[in-house]
Structure formats: C-alpha cells, structure tokens
Image 1: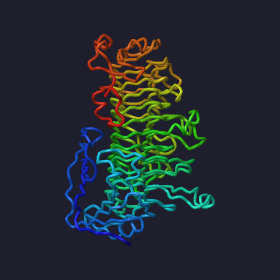
Image 2: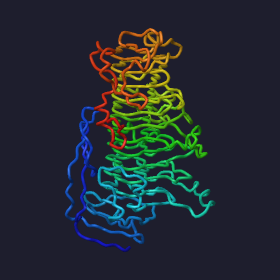
Image 3: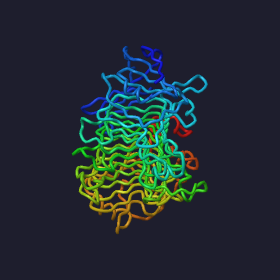
Image 4: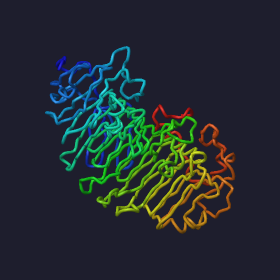
Amino acid sequence: MKTTVSIGLGILLLTQLAFALPERAVELPGISGISGVSGIAGISGVSRAPRAPDASGRTVRLGPDDDLQEALNRAVSGDVIELQAGAVFYGPFVLRPHPGSGWVTIISRSDAQHPLPPAGTRVTPADVSAMASLVATTGSVISTAAAASRYHFIGVEVRPGQRDSILDQVLGGLGTLTTLVDLGAGNNSADNMPHHIVFERSYLHGDPVLGTRRGIAMNGAHLAVIDSHLADFKSMEDSQAVGGWEGSGPFLLHNNYLEAAGENVMFGGADPSIKERIPADITVTGNHFAKPLSWRRADPTHDGSNWTVKNLLELKSARRVLIDGNLFEHHWPQAQNGFAILFTVRNQDGDAPWSQVEDVTFSNNIVRRVAAGINILGYDDNHKSRRTQHVHIRNNLFHDIGGDWGSGVLLQLLNSPAHIQFTHNTSLQSNALLRMDGDPIPAVDFRWNIFMDNSVGISGTNTAPGQHSIDTYLGTPVTIAGNVLIGSGDHDYPSGITRVDAINSMPFTDPARADFRLQAESASVIADFAEVPGVDFTALCSALSTTERPVYC
C-alpha cells in the first residue's frame, strides 16, 4: 500500500454535533449552523461545539492505487484518512472496532479548483468532482463488524460498481447492491451494534438505470447523515434512501436530499431480533424529501420505469421522533393509495408484538404536490401490536394536496390511535380534511387550523360529514376550537369550526403563488378567536433549510 503519513491533524478542523436526549447524550462530529429545538418529542436540544483533534492522530493520504481497507484496519483513534478526490476505491469495505475512544475520519482531499463545500452546506451531484468514490459490486460498499464505532465520513461518493457485461448484471442481481451502506448487519444483541457513525457532505446514489434498493441501513446507535445527497434508490421491491429497524438510536437526519421510490425514509418495517427493540430518539430536520417526476406514469417526463412507489416517510415502529422543518413533495398513488406521510404501526412479520409508534412531533414542514397527506393507524390490522399514540401535527403548510395528484384527503385516522393533536396547520386539499374508520379515537385536539371543506370536511365510513362523523368516531375527550373551514357546504359542525364561503374570502397574501400568510383583513374573520389560526410563517420559515425556504420567507 502506498501511503503518506504525517503526525498530527494539521489544518483539518472538525466540529462536533451534540444532541441531548432523555437519559442519554450523544456527541458526534458534524456541522455548524443547526438551530436549537427544545421541548419536542422528548428531545431537549441541539447544540454544537468544537472537538479538539487527537494529538496522537495521524493523517494517512491515499491515492487510487492504495488499499483503503488496509488503512481502515490499521486506523486508531484520532487518525484521518485522506482520499484523493476523483480516485475510485474498490470495496467492499468493513468498518471494525479500532483502538481507543476517539474518532477515525475518512475525508476526500479536494483541491482549490474543485473544493468540497464548507461544513453546513448540503452537497449536490455537481460536487462529485471534489469527492473520492467508494464502490463495490457485491455485498455492500460499506458494512460494519460487531461493535464498530466512531467513524466519520466526509465528502465521499458511495455507489454501486459497474459490472462488465449484461450477463454479469443478470447473474449478479441486475448489477446492483441491495444496500450501499449497511450499519448493523446481523446484529443480535445490544453489545454488537455499531455506534457513533456519521456521513457528512456525501453523495450516495444507486445505479441510475438498474436502481439500488437501499442507501443506508441505520441499525445501530448514535448514527447521523448530514448535509448529504441520497438519490436513485429504486426497485420493484420496497426501497429506501434511509431505513432502520434493528437499532436503538438516537438517529439524526439533517439537511439532506432524500430520494427513493418505496419509502424515502422508513423506521420499522422488519421485526428486530432484539426483544422490545423500537428505533427511538429520531431527529429529522431540514431535509428535502422528493421523488423524480420521471418515475410518475402520468407525467410527460416519465422514463418508462415501473418502480414500486409507496410514500415519502413512514414510521412502522418508532418512538420519540421529531420531524421538523422539512419539505415533502412529489408523491402519487402507485403501489399504495398515495398518502405521503404514514404513522402506521406494523408488527411486520408477526414476531414483534411490542411494535409501536408513539411520541411523534411533525412540525414546521411543507407538504405539497402529493396525492394525500398523513395516514395514522392505531393498531396493526394484521398482527398484534401496541397502540399508536401521542402524535402532534403542528404548524405545517399543506397545499396542492390531491387534484391531479390523487385522492386529496388531508388526514386519515384508522383503527383508534390515541392522543392526536392537530394544531395551527393550513391546508389547501381537494377532499376531506379528516377521514376516519374503526373504533372511536380518544383524546383528539383540533385547534387553530385553516382547511378547505370540499363538501366532505370531517367524515367517516358510513356517516354523514360533520357532527354525525364527529360523534361517531371521535371519543372523549375531544377539543375542537378556533378552526376556519373554507367552503359553502351545509353540513352541521360544532361552534369550534367557523365557515368562510370561498377561498377568495380568506385574506391570504397570494394563494396563486402558494403564499398563504394572513393579511390584516383577516381580523374580521377571526375576531373572536383566542389565537390566530393557521400557520405561524415566522416559525415555519425559521425551521426550513435555506435551500427549501419559499421566496416570502
């Protein structure tokens, strides 16, 4: 192996991302520029601080003819492995435990002509010239041995390698890997889990023609993906940019572009081998979730593909989750009915009756150009599970929900979830604002929202829209106050819902440009309200990534 080694980290500067959670704390190297959050989904805050280099660390420089696996095997705490930008390193690569408690950093060594964007900046495919490439044609490109920990990847491209012939592609599973980065393969105990592994400012993508099923399998503890671009994860089976079912958490997804056909991000979806294991302490902030319109059969740009398209984000087993300041867009019915966001508990294969979705905050997000909004399932209707409960949906903007995209239902509650709060949201949807089925739903709080009526409003299976559906499906206690319903329907609603005849009677700033801020004229509409209904756009704009902020922010 040809290497150049220098003692000390020199001018390399690393930062540390630390987020505190109940009864645990995590310290990760990472980024600058994350604003704090508090009091949401059990997460007490997000902060950052410099991490001093390990004085004993070395810098190991590798070129295209060098052996990255050997360098990983030799690495000790504090080492930095610099990879020449533009070089291709052929795996698969295995991360193993290394001596000491410090970090090993793997970073691309770019030059002034092709610099890696600074920390805190989301990369795009155009930045690939500043990156070294890690590739493999079998297994995973990167996987972990038991208890591997404290690896920080910065500015790397991870992709499937190209097979030499069509025959090789067919015999090798169509030339694609199932999972590019497998963090936690074969974990069967808490002691074996990988932990403290970060991907920052990196570009992970599947084969553009053949697809790849999964970008990162997050089955460990203290795992993060930051400022990165994950795309082209697609398959005739379920596919995800990020998926986890076996790990304990915490997990952080911050300021990434996340693209997949099946579920862009999913937690749960397979029964963990560890009893009572539920992925927990999940923070999803400032990301862009989308599917390319070229995958949509009805779109003029459709490329002829027939990938399995399901939803943008799904929680099947998860607790203490914060989903804040994200943009969700471009979703349509194909393999499923078109809901973009699913909080649907599943004991997937019947061996995990402890499966549960609970303590979820969905706040300060924009959901647009999708078939339907959010679907919440109380109990798994296939296998025994615990109940979905304590879901707070707050200060989100929903627009272009339905129409040409699909059914247009904003919120669906099935099989009796509990403690559902839906507050300070603004929704322009083409169908029901709330659709219900199953046993009564206890402890529902609907306050300070603005919705379209579309003649169906609040409805349930075999019940008339309005008060009849509320009485049938919403159990006690139920709070309905300060809501505005836009539309001229004649259904009976309680006093907590105020009608406005038409959208042009609601003083939005510029609805044609999706600017739904309320102007001063709204005072007459909400004169008796204790709070201003709809989205607080100051809070929404502050939470969104600068890349996704609307022009009015």
